[in-house]
Amino acid sequence: MPATYSQDLRDRVLAAYDRGMKTTPIARLFQVSASWARRVKQRRRETGETGPRPRGTPGVRRFDRVRLAELVRQRPDATLQELRDQLGAACATSAICEALKVMGLTLKKKRSTPRSRTGRTSRRGGRNGDRSCRT
Image (cartoon, rainbow, N blue to C red; front, side, top):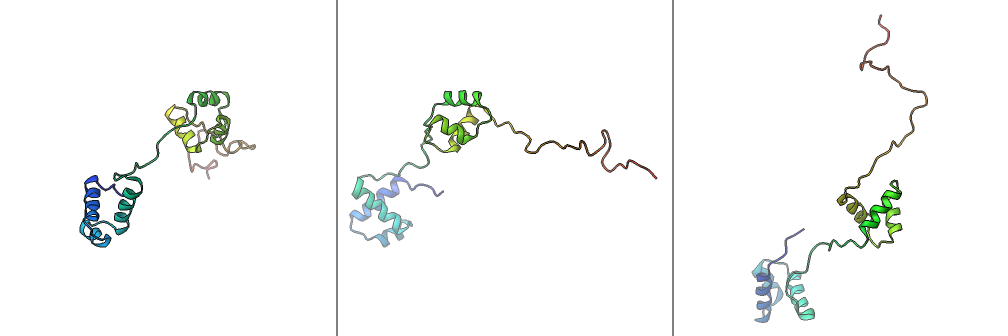
């Protein structure tokens, strides 16, 4: 993600517009894109704001973590989507996952395949590559 331009640069670009300069010369002078210079000018005209907008997500969790922990204790095998649905939360399943990580609740993996019905396929205590019958 590119860095945010400084307030000083924004002020100098806007001052150049105020002096009557056109967009292309301003962009060349300050080594910025013409579209960025136009957007700074447009934003000041429409909203009065000249500073950079906040970046990133707000990081707000819109669900009760105590209730989430309770749901996990009641049903530890529930999926993230099931937990979200039970909470009635309007958030991504990744937010539920992050909350569980912060709370120290981890996923317990189960075997995904059933055990072999025929039993072990190698001798107990046998070494790899060891032949059972020597000639």
